[in-house]
Amino acid sequence: MADVPAPIDVTQTSEWHALQQHFEKIQSSGANLKSWFANDPQRVKKLSYDLSDLHFDLSKNLVSDETIKLLVALGKAVDLEGRRDAMFSGVHINTTEDRAVLHTALRRPASEAGSLIVDGQDAVADVHEVLDRMYAFANKVRSGEWKGVTGKKIENVVSIGIGGSDLGPVMVYEALKPYADAGINVRYVSNIDPNDMAEKVKGLDPETTLVIIVSKTFTTLETMTNAREAKAWLLEGLKSQGAIDGGDASVERAIKSHFVAVSTNLELVEQFGIDPQNAFGFWSWVGGRYSVDAAVGLSLIIAFGPEVFKDFLAGFHDLDTYFCETPLEQNVVALMGLLNVWYVNFYKAESHAVLPYDQYLHRFPAYLQQLTMESNGKSTRWDGTPVTCETGEIFWGEAGTNGQHAFYQLIHQGTRMIPADFIAFANTPNPTKDGEQDVHELFLGNFLAQTKALAFGKTADEVRAEGTAEWMVPARVFTGNRPTTSVFGEALTPHALGELIALYEHITFVEGTVWGLDSYDQWGVELGKQLAKQITPALHDDEALALQDESTKALIAYYRAHRK
Ligand code: F6P
Image (tube, rainbow, N blue to C red; front, top):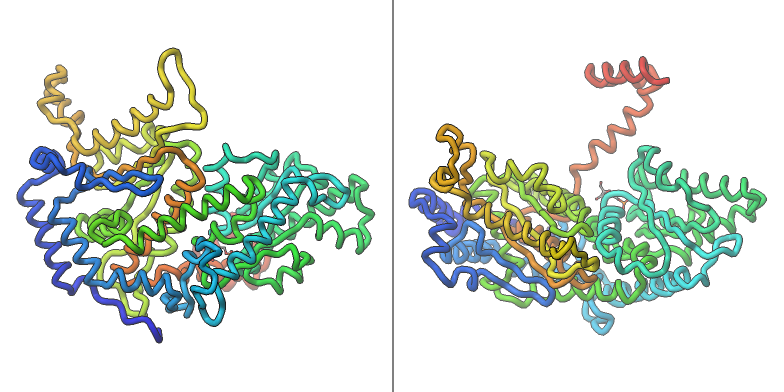
């Protein structure tokens, strides 16, 4: 806690009270999106923002000019700018782990080497040393210079990791698939469920497969179990194909040619048998869920090439720069974070939907779930004191238009308010026509229709005018006034994707700062891990079973009775 001031209790600030009064005024006056739009022809202009690749329309949020002013004041009251600068400069704002939080250093250009010395280490120079090694390695794999133990070119990569060592790479691999140009497929294994590994290695030839083990700690149960399984699969496969004789030397050669690792724990990597030259490190100041732009993205560099990855990093960096240099009043990144606070703490919204109208972003909501919920799902502040208001939202979503035919009913007509971010791009890499109809335009028509319906709804009179029987009118009314943010981009390029990820990283930071959270630890995942170790033997061992609670015992009894 040395350099970190205690969190300010936001609920005790005059800015919080002003927001509460303002909220009550909005509620009692009946002001809503329809009236705000009708009364202010400049509303869209005032609430639109542009970054290099992304355009933002915040006008369909439940805010007036006054709300924005008060939210910005709230940000200032908790010294948002001071904490942001502390984070970027390497202060140990991750207090419970006494660590700096420097994922933003991962995307600083090499020209900034020497400008960020953290704990005695030149962070930017270190980042670029690893990046250069990754680029060189990836180029070898892509060109075929890197060969499997029998001299064949690598055609498939199996990347093993979980949480931040999986969700980011999977999401980006899916998002940038049109950029995969080396004929190398990547499959991601995360679950300890043996079904995951079994399905992912199905049909692969060990001679042309490279396995990347991705684990910050190199101790995670799932990843290390899967890594050993992959080792066994690969060695048995090579042996049965007569590719290696199975002697120690051939096994060692096979592992060196087919296994590489990404980790902060290089000692354990070596113990696994991986050549330290084929290990790519990162640092304790990169949280797992903030690491897709660290060495954790190695599979992406292999699939897409260094140039794509450089563009991706530049997108992050541009957004970082914008976040740092734009006054809060015009800073769309800060405003989106503050808007979430507005909905969580004043409207009591419990969840937040993220709805990408781009099939390539179909894993984006899952990625955001770890980023946001592992960061801000907390009841204790960064100095160990309890939080003073609701924190964290449940982030969820699905690619449009699939969600429309599933859960949008609840967003449109349910009793809960669900603020939603709609994300779309003007261009698609797969333009198609259905007769005369441009299919992408049909898709975008849906993107636009949904936010319009949510904002402005449909009145009882409009429903009646359609000839609806009176008793059925209420069921067909749409109240509207349901908040959305539209994020529109020219195309889902590597640069735009970098901007989009950094956007949500910083939204998460803004919310965490207002709530006084250490958004960079994750103690809440530990108890389950500990108990799993203790319970697993009870599945077959009576002594361990006797130590369990009655419900767990009964479930294990069911297991024992049914396991064949
Ligand atoms: O589930 C907790 C967690 O520590 C995540 O924060 C992390 O991303 C994941 O496990 C994987 O950890 P590692 O990269 O060390 O294997």
